[in-house]
Length: 325
Ligand SMILES: Cc1cc2nc3c(=O)[nH]c(=O)nc-3n(C[C@H](O)[C@H](O)[C@H](O)COP(=O)(O)O)c2cc1C
Image 1 (spheres, helix red, strand yellow):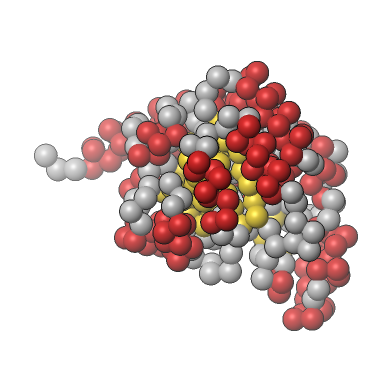
Image 2 (cartoon, rainbow, N blue to C red; image 1 turned 180 degrees about the vertical axis):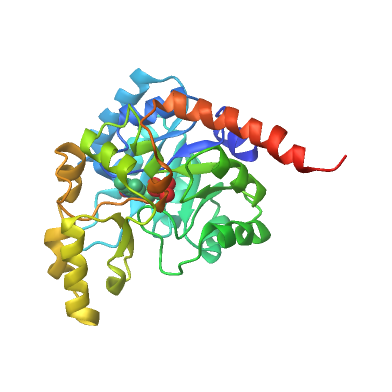
């Protein structure tokens, strides 16, 4: 498949692995890129810009294909060393950056100057248009189904993607709820030029996370995610567990008076506990509704090959077969 996304990023297949905290390490990014997709290292999982520089170098030893780095801009009292991270990306020769969270405008001149292509993740048409107007090269349109932060508008991809197609001139990929060839073909039909997957890539052989997490994803159904932190306008879709149930009870009890400090036990330090130690009740970790479509733990190569060959079969067989001559 050749699309504006495969052309823009110099990749074989229009499939991107979105940045994921404590999941997007060099092993996963390299495996996705080696399989012809676009792997992405999660910048802020590396504690310092120097650590990110090392992770980029490590990824280079595992693949000679293009890969990217995710930079998530979060509101924070003590912000991370963003200038340092951006410099590590530039110095590391990375040519693709996935931005997410706040408006990345401040960092675009530096990134553009270095010849870096920027894809910004957005949960609404208005943010996508903003990204286009400030000079982003592409957008990842993240629907309400997605694992992680779906924003506060709650528009699912069956509406959000065609709306984005109506308004955007730059290419975009569908993100949120994407799992297989059906997702890819549907996303293309709705106007996207590729797809971004998070949760699906966690249940792969190369994802450098605890086996308990992969097993939990295979066991989970589409009914097993919950939205947390809505009262803080920082909504996150997570997999249900004892920690999340505790968090939701606090949200119910405290109502609009909820403060971040009230739930810190269920949200802070959770990622290393879950991803590295497999403590599945530790608290809130991002997971998409797409867990209901995850039934196995293939290698990234098997997953991507399967998606591309099934997509061809759906288009040439099922869809063309439905047309009258
Ligand atoms: C465990 C996990 C951690 C994530 N961490 C980040 C992150 O640090 N930054 C970011 O921009 N997106 C993050 N995301 C969102 C993904 O990049 C992607 O947009 C999302 O997973 C797409 O929805 P899906 O899970 O339905 O495929 C995370 C998602 C998951 C599942």
